[in-house]
View (cartoon, rainbow, N blue to C red):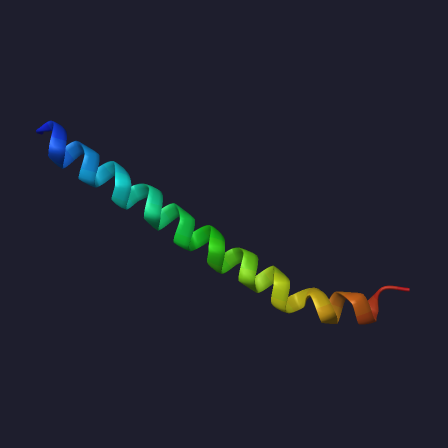
Amino acid sequence: MKTKEALINYCLRLADNNLILAQRLAEWCSRGPFLKRTLP
């Protein structure tokens, strides 16, 4: 694998990880009002 291809693959993996983490964060943020209402 050439250096340029390796760099492209690395950047795509970073972007994919960030996308997944952002989606999970959005899920938790959307549950915030529900959790706030149910806590004593």
